[in-house]
Image (cartoon, rainbow, N blue to C red):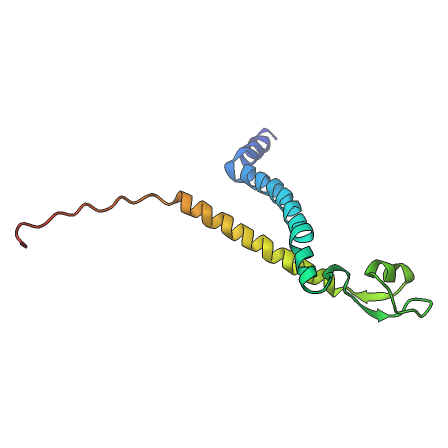
Length: 132
């Protein structure tokens, strides 16, 4: 049992496990920021440019509600009435969200890689006396 505990401590304290835990925590916080960026900053101007279009509430009714109605304002209203819907607008919003996250991560990694690269000094050149 002591050997297993020792192995577990070595695993948990190793840099990889700690780095992974930190990455997951920061990733969760970063996800909230990106969701707000998409929902609160990017989508309102896009919606304005597209005449008030809000992707998150775009859906198709695949099966009418129990009372036969097919006209609903939101997918939530349709679901409450018992209709079956295809919520493609939410999918479009998630794709936009993913593209923004991927772009942000790319820019972050790119910047980190540039900081890590060693600065190369200019090569020192001399005139060769035999070549002149």
